Structure formats: C-alpha cells, structure tokens
Length: 233
Ligand SMILES: [Zn+2]
Ligand SMILES: [Zn+2]
Image 1 (cartoon, rainbow, N blue to C red):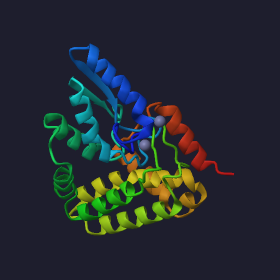
Image 2 (image 1 turned 45 degrees about the vertical axis):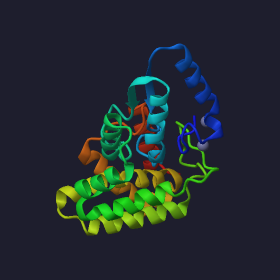
Image 3 (image 1 turned 90 degrees about the horizontal axis):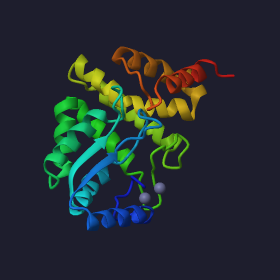
Image 4 (image 1 turned 135 degrees about the vertical axis):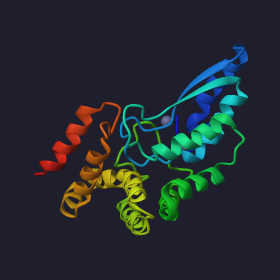
C-alpha cells in the first residue's frame, strides 16, 4: 500500500481496497492490524498523517469493529511518536473527529511557544506530498520525496523552535522531535553531518533519551548507523 495517499485515492491502493471490500462482503465483522510507521527507519520523516483519519474510516465502512495501529513499539524516539499516538487515540475513540484542531492543540500543549515552529516543520514535510509521491513501508533516505533543501529548511525551523522554548523540559522535547531530520541528514550527507555537529547533536539526544531502536531490527541497524558515521572513509 501507499501511505502518502489514502486507501481510496491512490491507484496503488486499489487492489488492497478490493480485498478489504471482499472481506467485508463475506465476514460479519473485521479486526484490522494496520501499520502507521516506517519500520525500516522509525526515526526518519514519514508523512502519513493526512491518511490516518481517512483510512480508519475506510476500515469502519467495511465492518471493522477493532483496529490496532502498530507503530514504533520497542523504543521511544519514533518520528512524531507522541503526536501520532495522541491523534490516533482521538481518532479511534471518534473517527469523525476533526484532525487539524487535535494537531494544533497538541502542538501548543506539548511544545508551548515552540509549537508554532514544530507545526511549520510538520507542514513543510507534509506539503512535499503531491499526487506523484507515493510512500511505502520501508521508505528510504534517498527517496525523491526528500531533498537536501528540505533537510536544510527543516533544521533551520528547529533552530527557531529551540530558541523560543518556554523552558528546558520543552526544549528537550523539541530536540526529540527534531531527531528525524538530523537522522535524515546523517543518512543523506554523512560527511557534512559529521563536520557541522548534526551527528554529535543526534548522538547526544538519543543517548540522553535512551532511544534503543532506530528501526524495528534494533541493535544491528543502530550499530551499523553509528559505525558508518564514525568510520567515514
Ligand atoms: Zn505500494
Ligand atoms: Zn500513493
């Protein structure tokens, strides 16, 4: 399936949608196990927020009475993990909820004054989606969805966000939500990330926060990432 576009709007999802409707025809109820993060890079940008409500409603229209939204379940530090869990909880409770007020509420409630910038980054990321940008589980750092310009702009926004943080606790929350763009830079431009302090900042924050999994595969992925960064030829 494609997760930048919802089940109903993306041609890539037609086959899945037909399967779902087929099951709804022959089963009294459905229980759904859905995937809402990139298991290959938990800690990398993954703009699927615009499909969450629509997809939950598509399940509901097709006799779903239970939905499990599987995300980064082994560690903290997943991309927008706090916001994703908050929004999904609201939507599972009431699939008719308006998404934007929930996101706004979270941005200002959890990130305080920095929230306006976190929101700006969130929009920058999601506005990269066009009818031609399909994203899948396993989205890679080299995907055409991303660009070096996007990485530069994203990091700049977080500089602003950290400057206006209400207090140290909130500043640290902003550092956590910044990790995915730092990780993306390390993956795309490792030399630059090492030279300009991006890697050092990433490493400092993941150690402080005790983040163990950058991907579902855990330690091998994490070791490979750090080994690669610290042994650039
Ligand atoms: Zn696909
Ligand atoms: Zn698509």
